[in-house]
Image (tube, rainbow, N blue to C red; front, side, top):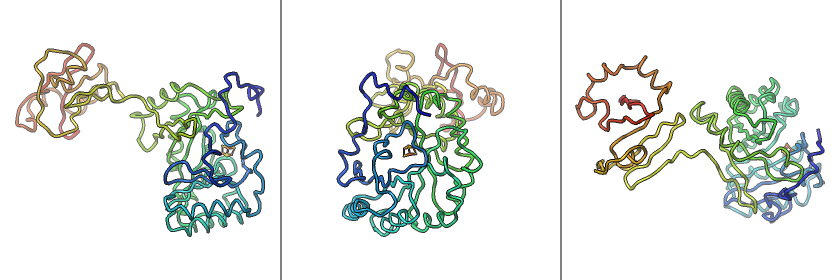
Amino acid sequence: MPSPLEQQNPSGYELEDPLEEDKDSPVPGLTHRYPDRALLVTTHVCTMYCRFCTRKRATMVRGGWDAISRNDERMVEYVRDHSEIRDVIVSLTLPASKLKFFLDNLASIPHVDVIRIGTRVPVTLPQKLYDENLIDLLASAGKVWIQTHFNHPREITPEAARVCLALLKAGMPVNNHTVLMKGVNDSLETMRSLMRGLLRIKVRPYYIFHCDPVIGAGHFRTSVWKGLEIMEGLRGHMSGLGIPTYVVDSPHGGGKIPLMPNYLVSASDDAVVLRNYEGMLVRYQAEDKPQVVQPTRTRGVSALLQGSKSALIPQHSERMARRELNVLTNAELSDLPDTNGHHEHNGNGCHEEGAQELVPLRGM
Ligand code: SF4
């Protein structure tokens, strides 16, 4: 439902075309921003008219949706004339005749490898895809991937699951993007539930978009820290299959910029110190060269860099407790030779205040 908040834009930061897509538009409706991709906005008709839509300027005003227009032909011609374009994103909710026009023409262009159909139909109007002829039409292009848009676990209905499965069975991968919105899905619990729900219906979580500063969407926008907090609670806590990339779409047409919590803590000439999801800090040597332990007495992260320790592990780590209980006891370990035939737990004696001894288990 519209909200009076949509009328507010106190910072003046919200714009009609915040991503400057129209400035990167050599043909009306077509945005050519990245080297090998083009976006085709082919209609003003949408199944949803989301309040936060980045392209509401198009869904509100662009006409001529039900017949093939001169601009449709020019968009296809542009793609045909630009052999660097490999991936075409077609944003549309169209009558089958126009869909067929785009699919037939784009699929016949040899340098186009991928046609991504961006649509919320599987989410908001799945019954439309109960039509097997429509699924067959999409599949017949042979290059189609579906890019859909679930924002909340409650949107994963049996009807939506049914059409996603039908698309997959017809050979079309289904990816999802989600827009991060205050009061809608800006909690770890909701996002975990959404990502798990998507995996259950075999839809790959692809992106979490920070909500764009489009006019009328300011009240949905939350801090980047909230997005990072959510990503911190996804990575490591669930399968990598369920981890989307969190991106900010840059002002001035800079495109998508991925953001993530910082896992690189420090670095020296010989090694980096990395952090895992548990807070373990580990020395990692990327290159295969002899490890030289620097003579300077030091502690903490610096000791990892100097090579006198290999890891700092937080106390009360569930994983380490499981090792001790279920895998090997320290006593059993002391009887096992390491790869050099030595008997030791940890050549680096990894003990620090607030840290637990690293127990090296080969093969883990
Ligand atoms: S479904 Fe997509 S194109 Fe349609 S209004 Fe929503 S975000 Fe915009």
